[in-house]
Every structure is written in structure tokens, then in C-alpha cells.
Length: 396
Image 1 (cartoon, rainbow, N blue to C red):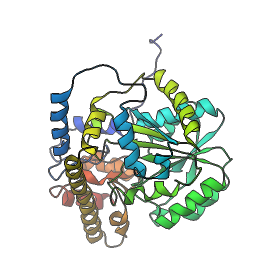
Image 2: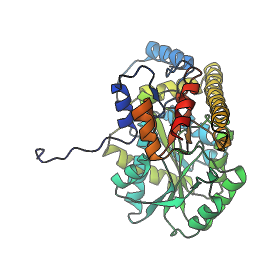
Image 3: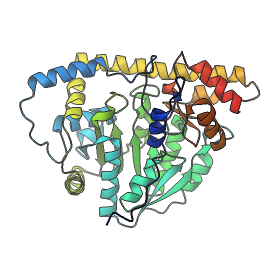
């Protein structure tokens, strides 16, 4: 069976991280994998997480399975974080939430569910998008196609082209949207553009699948939900895949949620029953530790305040590095406009580098960047940013 199996190519992002680990250079710089790093270049464990874990260890009385849909308290708090506990979607009971193994797990369960209940619909992803989006959807048997999103000439959203594309999509298809901190470009729609997008999506009879991986990393917890809330209209249907890897720093705990909004509570419970079958035949039920951490923090006023403070520090560091990177590149390459680097949101931005320039940076200067030019701004530090800008300027 296995003798004739071919070697698979390395993952476009994780493969680069492995190559970085093998690089013997002492001044190497890694801007590939999407993890937050502090000013010292480390990915920290939040203080509020440490305290939540201490409480969990002291109070834990069992290692028995969670339910198929996960920890009920986590599901409730995750839903409230997305919509607000007083939102009609929550109070009406027409939103069903399942705990999943990370945001990626939520996307896969969503794709399996859509394929199960509406086999022939396509899913539309932004051009460009997170490289794993189409892979996850295709693995579930869905056809993945693209719509125009990013204009490299202006480093902004191609809103007119995007809206025209939305208005031509077949009714019943699914459109995947990044709620904030677009990966890989860092370019988000404005509030006015979000309204236009939501209008077009619902007028066309599409189902929005909103990937919300970075709540709190852009402008704030509520501010970053503005795009999502444009889709939260009476009688609407939508799907939200949310992740707690970044905003809680729980990367290896694999904690996410899938929230399905139906037209009423009865429909939500029926859809939940089908989603639970997708889970049961995949990973059966999710792990408990990450959900316990998030639930412990969100339901305790002091821990939640501490979390929001630490989240603000992470966001401020990202935005500070964006400004420094923009200013330093503008000084070193005055013939080019780098203002978009400061205007973007989240950890990621397109650098404007070609694939050949990215290869040159890696081969000559031990700077690791995804070949499409995406950089993780959070991988920069005060100690390496000038050296980084010098190296980028040398290949530009």
C-alpha cells in the first residue's frame, strides 16, 4: 500500500518554519508562521491564562469526555463574545455553538455540514486568502473558487470588483469572509464597505461563512466585530468560525468555536444535530483544557479585565511595529510608498516583495517570508527591525 506513495510537498507556511529551525545563521529572522511574539521575540503565556490554569488544576475532578458539542459554558461565553449576550441572535436561541479543535476545526466542521445539507454549492474565498482555506474546503468535498479582493497597486480592498463578483454568485453558494485582520494582506473593508458587502451577500441569497481568527488584534474586541455585526440581521443565516489561539495565546491548546445562526431556534437545533454528526464521525468530541481556560477567564470579572489588558498590550505592540516598519522602510526606500504598512490591521501584511525577492532574502540574508510576500509583523522586534529593513531594501 505505502511503497508507491509519493513525497508530499512541505506546507507553504509550516515548511518554511521548519527550514528556519534548520538554518544555522545566528542573525536569522522568522516572519512566517502566524504567532504573536513579544518584544524579546518570545511567544508568551498570558498571566491570566496561568492563573486560570492554576484554578483548573485545583478544581478539576474528572477527565471524562466532553459532549460532542464541547463544554456548555464555553459555548455560551464564546457566543456572547461574538455577538454580545443581549443581541437578538443570542436571546432568541437561534444560534447554535459547538466547541472545536481550533478555528481550523471549526472551518472543517462547517464545510462538512454545508456539504451534508447542500451537496452542490461552491464556496468563494477572497483572492488572496489564508492558504489553508481552500485546502480545508476541498478536503471536505466542496468546490473552492475565488472572488477579487486585494488591489496590490493601492494596497487596499477592490470593493467595486468584489461587489460585482458577489452579485454574480449563484444563490445558495457560501462566501468565506475574514471578519478582521485579513490574512494575508492586513487590508480590511471600512464600516461602510462592510454594509455594502452584507447588503450584496443577502440580496444575492448567499450564506456568509465568517472566519474570525483575530478578534481584538485589530482595533478592539467590539471594533473588530463590526463587520460580523453587519451580517447579524433579523431572519438571517450565517456561519462563524472563531479562534482563541491568538487573542488568548492558546496556540497549542487548539480551541475554537463554530457558531451557526439559523432563522429560528427550532432550525438552529436541527442544524446543530447535523453538525454533531459531522463532529462524531471526525474527532468525536473536543479536548477540555483550552475551553476550560477561556471559560474560566471570561466568566470571572477580574480575570476578564486582566485578559483585556494583556490583549491591549499585544495589539499595541503589533500596531507599534507596523508604524516603525512603515517609517523605516519609507526612509530607506523613499521612492516607494509604504504607508499601507501602518494602515493595515492585525499581524499580517503584504510586503510588496516578489517571490524571487523572497527567495533571495532567505538564501542570502536568512530572512524567512512566505513566497507570496506575506509578513508577520509580530515577528519583528526593536532589535531586529533595522537589520530587517536593510535586508529588504537590498533586494528591492
